[in-house]
Image (cartoon, rainbow, N blue to C red; front, top):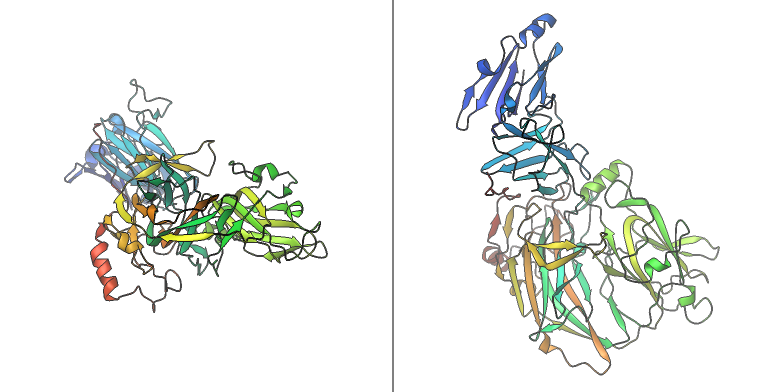
Length: 631
């Protein structure tokens, strides 16, 4: 025996079809009850002949619109295969949805598909099981409605994708014409290769508008699956560099906006703005770039006269110097991408620093040499790493090699760090790393890292600087929405337009308790594991008192560093605790998820924080597909 829920009459309500022995039963869903429609819907002895002829009983069946006439048919296994055609179900209209997976499996097996047609809401799921509880086709009955207002797919990879331009969908024979309205309309949904999680976005007031600076806090990602039994170790603090032309005073304050726009939960513990004063011909950079543990500690590099290397060549011998000389969205990318997100073939970039080294023709071995590599990373997520492990692959962080006395390449920095912002400058100090007179360096990895600009600094690094820290004067948490994605050339990395905001979420939201809206300045004034817990769509508006900064000496300027400490957790199914806010992280944890012997602090202050601030509760991970005025 077998049974399936399917809409045999296309009225938008799922009916129950069951086969037991030589009989087929149809229980019609009429809204508030089930009605046995077997005698009216099934021809006498539909299956009996086949079953008796083979001396067997009907055991299984599959369903689908096999004759493309807009209703669901059956193919029954009763010794021999028997085709049970649905005659008359297409008196009502229907919509067939085809799924084309890109990140998920190609057929979209496991996807959940919703359709909203006026007040009618339906949800179907694709199955690979046999016997399946539902048809192999995703077909929505519409009654006499013309077309759905919206179709939304929750892909197995976790991506939520809505399609609202449904009315113009194609008919089964090329067009849904008035001559043959019974033919099922057809909508193909191709999965977007969309990054479901990354980091919050930073916008700064530049005197005219809020300018996108970068995403950040990527190092605080926790619970990511790296290899069997191995999770990442989060690096919770980061210094985000902001140029002086990107941050200007407004009414005596510096204003920043931290927007949380992707599919993850954000735990933000500390924010402060550091104003670094320095001579105008000097550039300063924090010691950033994500590595494995031990993580980098803060250091400020002062540079003067940094220039591109003398040469830059890729694996194919192509000159890459024009691509890495300027911040112009041109970068070395002539390497093959693996089908798994975040992975590529192993590739190298060779730099010749010789003409940039001062002193002797080949430079002194202990002379200060600093690489400034600005770029971005196309990350792999937990599920990508799981798939890679099954393929016998693993990520190779960028290793830096120099030539030894024999002229051979030798690794001197196994993990030089990756950019975790889009963009971010990675600093690599090569002082004392050269093993011969050669000043060639080679960077090798199988990660998708794109270097937009590479500079070499050989100054002594002793330029005067002065740092002043500013705590937030205002920090306000509100739900805002989602910034419009923009790119000037159709290529990554994408930027975001702060002024263009959509209230519609393309993401799921973790279940649990989030920080209530309003003043959160007390939560961001010190590192104490009392977090601003932000959901997707939230924004923290932060202002700093510019009048507290001392005056600048003549010929000096400022560069700003936003210091942030916190964690984030994505909703990848293979990440730790991906569907709920709990358990909360804390700085003393050994990892995430942490051991049973460890726990989030339970002091009276932390309990009061939980009760006072974290009162915004999310019960549903995916918002309901809303009804429109269309009927």
